[in-house]
Image 1 (cartoon, rainbow, N blue to C red):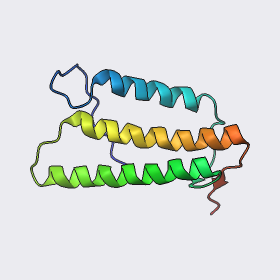
Image 2 (spheres, rainbow, N blue to C red):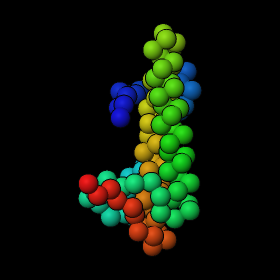
Image 3 (cartoon, rainbow, N blue to C red):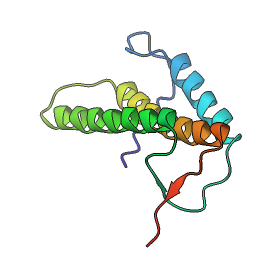
Length: 112
């Protein structure tokens, strides 16, 4: 899991406003506070809504890998783009957990 460096200041040329990133992080914290603490590795699935959120998360992770591949070619990608796509993936994961919790759908957990 790639943890890009945090953007520290507002950049008027940034393709994503820092406030948008802050709002996303606030939503992650809010949803996380409403679901049980993780004790096991959660597998994708559960309710239909949660399954859709997990699929969207998979697409985000693929996009993150593609962006990293692009940067490996020497192309410039503003750092906030990687930070945002990483946080969006985190949001979709916690959203799936929240949907399952809200609908009373048990989470699927990995058992070794």
